[in-house]
Length: 322
Image (cartoon, rainbow, N blue to C red):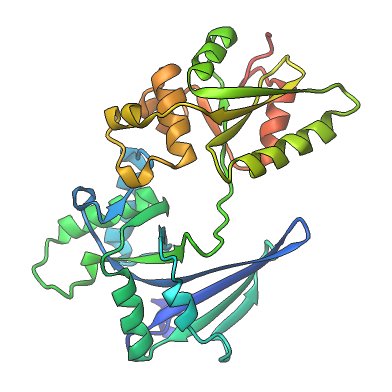
């Protein structure tokens, strides 16, 4: 209420889409990610119009639903991606106009926002996405909360805002960079059996190192992952107590296995789907619930932290024995 009174939150006078360009540097290279913020009609997953790729847990959804009921607001956009090789939206938006917002955040990312309120561009965006399938890149708990809140309100009003959720949408075809989250297996497993499982599906290339050239070999491994993954599903593997980095390249058609796990066709080429269904679920025996609750597996965003965890072999999280 205070934000409304002080006009921190301001209602725009007519329907508007917020076009966002985020500019940052990556290893000396200037990157711009483009997308837009709009409301998206909530679809049940059964319609296949909006697809998830993560398993969600009840506790966080209950917490978010309480927040939504109390505040009647969306506080963070669902991150969705779509495919449009013609880049119709990017080509239609005029970025020469003065932006509505231009601010650099604490991470050094410059966020530039333009207001789009002319009917021609709004209609073009709407028509471009009309029959597109959207993939949730981030925000699965928030999206399912939006579904639950919609069901809770259960209104028959076609313009009821509970039927929509605030989303950020970006085009997969617009040189989109999505950084990996690294997986640390913390459950004690037989490493030789694990390699036998991996060999069923992947070619394995070894990059041995010593204390003197470890950083150089690691850098080369990471560059090889980037290079090879342009054409094939590729992962890097690092095992404690071994002075070897491994490059895993998919060699086997895993379609039937993904069908067993009822993975939609549009998701079957995603590397994280192949990693989780083929290796973590099928071969290593992790359940969906264990993967979601990080029981025997950890999700680490920072590349350096993931490597350091293996090097340290923390007794509490990874175990010291070889």
